[in-house]
Length: 571
Image (cartoon, rainbow, N blue to C red; front, side, top):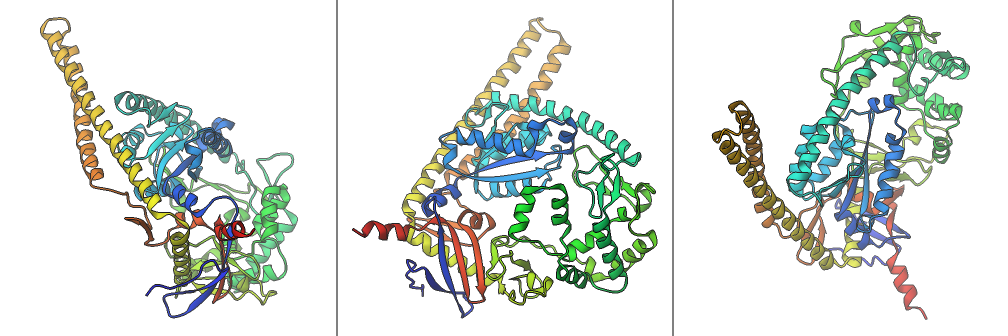
């Protein structure tokens, strides 16, 4: 039996499906309506930004992540059609374009498969991929099949304009050019970086915690008097038998800044400091572990720990320790080699420290806030998966933060609350009809693409016949004819294969009235949530503040239409 709840009330009770109820207070944003956000969610733009070490070597500031972002968003804002859509951002910083195996690239492509992205925008083709074969596969086959528009701004390419052979040939040519550029630049970068490291030069952006860059030579590390004492304290306590948890607890109790906060203060990074002032980070096992495993504290520069088999491969092969390259006595040691090796042996023997669980990130992660201290709640899959306030465990000076709530309860409550909002505030039939119209337009474009491909095949077959006739008439020699035939037959083989794939795609699309979207079922005249996902939560939820197991506040991104309606009624 469905719950009968008046959601115009600011606070309501929602059942968790486990026999208990949670009091939920609603608060709202100020800009868009829920219906506007829902339509934008169904038609999202993905902007993809990438910067590799090759780009850093070339030192082209226009390729920086910041400038790519500003460039693409400026393009969107000038386009009446695009600026109405919701924008999702995907960033791979430090990843080569020769390989598609990049974290945010894969996350974006997963959403494309789930039909949550209708347009992908990049600065140029090379940001998307420097492998012209992979690039062509997505731009010529996968994206058209999924009904996804692709825009490469600097290359003046928009798949909405280029349907057929001309645009595809242009893409292939530019892909080959980027392929060559990637090979050449990667070789230069590897040689330059290895030479610098081999000479004992430190080339990372920031010095590791415990050191600072020398004012006289930015490639040389010198000891930071304060931070180095903290590093020594961590090693000393760990070697005495203290757990990493207990070490973290002590540092937090003594008010010692974490490495991130300390480095931001030393470098005067106002942007980072502003974020840290709002919610100060705490020491934890991860931070302690990073210090205990950093061999640079022994005064040794280490490099070439991995070997890349092919240019552009992101997942390099890990080399045995005896094959690592080292520069001994490169800088002043903070920890003796003996103590470092003892700590490493102790950590290796600690199976709990080395054990790693692999789980997908929960859909509410990053949105859950402690109602007592304001820190983001941590999530664990250990035992019964839940959200909890790490501040309670890491900072014993604050006895208030004992928040802990099961993730299944919260997921159920948010899903039910959002469904109630959709039922009341959204004209579901209007949204479904809009999606039906867009599906019909996608089918029309797919049929046009198929027709253009078949026309291209007819032209190539005609060219092949004319090449043969020219040979028979003696206008071209045999060698030239055989070369022409080889090229035309290869083009035909590939084109015929793609035509069959496109024909199958058109048939499949014709059978779909309204496209499916992950987590949302669109039936005749109604929209029903089948589940929550991270993208849906990001689209509609600002944050969720947990005050107790049975009392939370959901801060929606959409505005309070109930209040506006009530205000309009009053004389």
